[in-house]
Length: 178
View (cartoon, rainbow, N blue to C red):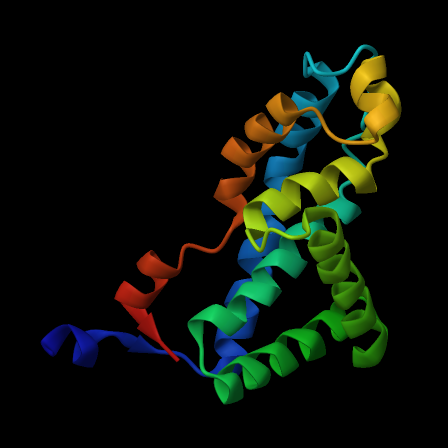
């Protein structure tokens, strides 16, 4: 009971700022590691040579996955208010309207859902979306290339790293409330 009272209260706008800043900081700092892992992964016959400057698809995959997960941790009204604040702040960052940025995020959410169907596990979807968004199929051995499916060992290695890019709700809810 006392721990609930001592938690710092955040507005939806404050949380949106934290959410965006944390995601962008971790993706900007982490993409170099992700790119290096992909480029040196033994699942690929030839290195995909992912450039560190090409981090935007990765950022949007992480953003979309965490954006979608808001629905699991907040009631519908809170989640919509938080999403609205996030979209508003992102539209300012990208100097576009909220409709366009919303469409981009929903495109990435649909990509994650489509490549991961029928599973609903967001982590697995992120790894598969990364595989497809960076066109990694062409760099695999012939067996997986013909199947047009990622090597499961590559996906497992990506899952082990990408878990670090999903929001840690347990830690967050111990310190804050919205």
